[in-house]
Image 1 (cartoon, rainbow, N blue to C red):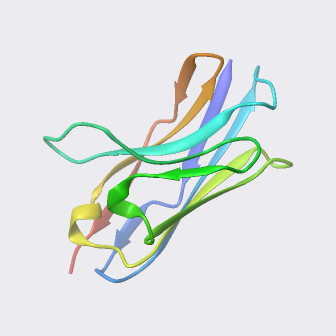
Image 2 (image 1 turned 180 degrees about the horizontal axis):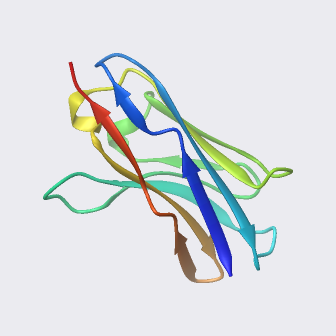
Length: 115
């Protein structure tokens, strides 16, 4: 079984910062891509950012320069530093592990940006 645990969501005022963390463990090798998706109420789930095992990052155009993804291979974790938060960043954020054609999802963590 693949276990994915997310943390770091919460309430933040516009312009503030949050740091999401995701830990992956279980029956999985060391070569996999990790990333974050988000889904706002009534909207489709969208890609936020991904990072490969070698540290190559990809970002959605909407978050470039605002969010930063990183990983710690020794701890099997991926982080998403979210700066300059906007109201439209409000969503459920999901960690995903992509491993040999399969996606494994976390339960989601809620991020709410409100004044």
